[in-house]
Structures are given as C-alpha cells and as structure tokens.
Amino acid sequence: MNLSRTVVYAGGVFTAYEDAKVGLLTHGLQYGTGCFEGIRGYWDAAERELWLLQLLEHYERLALSAKILTMKLPHTPSEMAELTRELVARNEFETDIYIRPCIFKAAEDIGVRLHGVPDAFAIIPIPFKKYLDVTGGLRTCTSSWRRVDDSCAPPRAKITGLYVNSALAKSEAQENGFDEAIMLSHDGHVAEGSAENIFLVRRGVLYTPDPSQNVLEGCTRRSIMEIARNEFSIPIVERSIDRGELYCADEIFFTGTAIGVLHVASVDRREVGDGAMGPITRKLSEFYDRAVRAREPRYRDWVTPTYAERRAPV
Ligand code: PMP
Image (cartoon, rainbow, N blue to C red; front, side, top):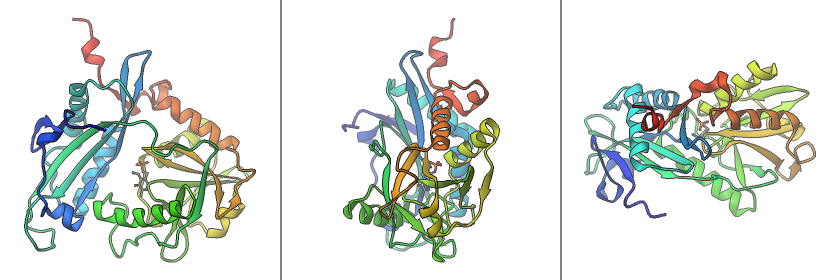
C-alpha cells in the first residue's frame, strides 16, 4: 500500500505521511515505550458516509494507557475525536478504514526510562478491509506463550512494547498451521487472543474473562456485552475461565475493533460445537455489524459521520 500522500496528523499539524519521519534512535522504537489505539471507520456506499466507530471510547482508553506510562497527551479525548474526524475528511476516503493514533517517547538517545523524555503524538489513517480473512471460522490453538502479567507490565494499557507478546503467540500459531492463538495467563487461565478478546457460550450463558485476567479492556468486548444484555437478554458472566472450558463450549468467538466478531471453529484441534458459527454468535455479530454502520437507531451514538457537514444544506 502506498501511503506517501496520505494525510496524517503529526507534530501538531496535518502533513503527508512521507514527510512525517521518526529517527532511528527514537525511544519508542528502541524500547517500545509508546501506546496506541486502533479505530475503525466503515464506509456506507449508499449513504456516501464514512462512520467512525466509538472515537471517544478509544481516546479515553488512550488517555488511560498514556497515564499508566506517565505520558501527557497534547489534547483531550474530545479534541482528539474531532481532530480524527477532520483528518479522515481531509483524506476523502471512500472505503473502510483503520485509524492508528499513538503517543510515544520521542527522544533520540540511549537510556531506557519514562521520566524526563518528551512525548510525540500522531494519528495515521489507512484504507483497510478485513484483518483476518477467514471464512468458516478460526482454527485456534492455546499458545505456549503466556499473556504478559500485570505485575510485569499492565496489559490493560495498549502499550507498543507489549505487542511482542502478541507477535510471538500469533507467529507460533500461524507457523504451526493455525489462524490465531489463545493466550493463557501465568496461572493457566484463559486471557485473550493476540489482538482480540474472547467469549464462550455454554448452555445459553455468555462467559468472558473478567478485566483482572490480564486482558485489554476491549471496546468491542464492551459493545458486545451491551448488545447481549440489552437486545437479547443473554446472561453474561465475567470470571476466570479454565483451558478445559474452551473444549466444552457450545460457541466461542473473538471480538476486536479490527475484526468485529469472528467465530472460532476449533481450539487445539477440537471442534467448537459442530465447528459452524453458533446461533448466539450469529445474532450478536449481525447486530454489531448493523450498529457500526449506523443502522441501529438506538446505537447511533456509537458512530460519528465523517462527511455529514460536507453535505449539509447551506
Ligand atoms: N486484546 C488485545 C491484546 C488487543 O490488541 C485488542 C485490539 N485492540 C483487543 C483485545 C480488542 O480490543 P478492541 O475491541 O478495543 O479493539
């Protein structure tokens, strides 16, 4: 993908991707001292509108990640939301997109630390279709890599350096012929995928690891719980989950901004149910897909239109 002419926000200005550079010794690159977000935009060709999903929720999480790393964002969450809308509009995208805001330690010198190092903030939007291109569900395995523990570095913050953990698990899974990894935490309980939260369905109840299980507090996780509770009255239990429960589940699915809702067909070569997408996964996934495209009036506040102003009557 040629991004050179894509407009990005960096150093406090809108500029071309090719003109926004970071140096080789940048702390964020060398030490992983940064945090970021992943935000989705869904293009509606009929309405000619690009719907930006949960801008405020993502920027509130970025603010918490930054706080954990003692970084200072240059804008409030609502300012960053508006900056993002303007940035996307300047690019005149007419496709699904992914937006990557990030803040990182920007000094170019040697010496790992957080304090006394200046921060830099940027937002990079890119055209984006599917993150995981699988039809028929994901074949997953439990990873031999454990999810990083909060006592080492907090996984509830979306920290750049922590993605080494995800990358090790993901590559191990794919190189062994699976699509995705399920990471267990240090004590052997189910944590999450490499970039997804996980849900199990058993006897009509939805189970997901509670936020103390070394998981990212996913925006999609929260949205799916809201839909399950409010639209379908599905009971939800947040608790620690054993590995063995993965093998007994009727349905399993992953959630994430990049993937939406994706069903898991097998875990460690054991089929989940009959391997096909289960009925609860299907109704949650279909409802979510409509809500993120502004087609569910009660969830209209989840999305921000990029171009509404452009078409407003004068
Ligand atoms: N866990 C991890 C480790 C992730 O990287 C992501 C993707 N941001 C998620 C879960 C899902 O979070 P969200 O629904 O906010 O995208």
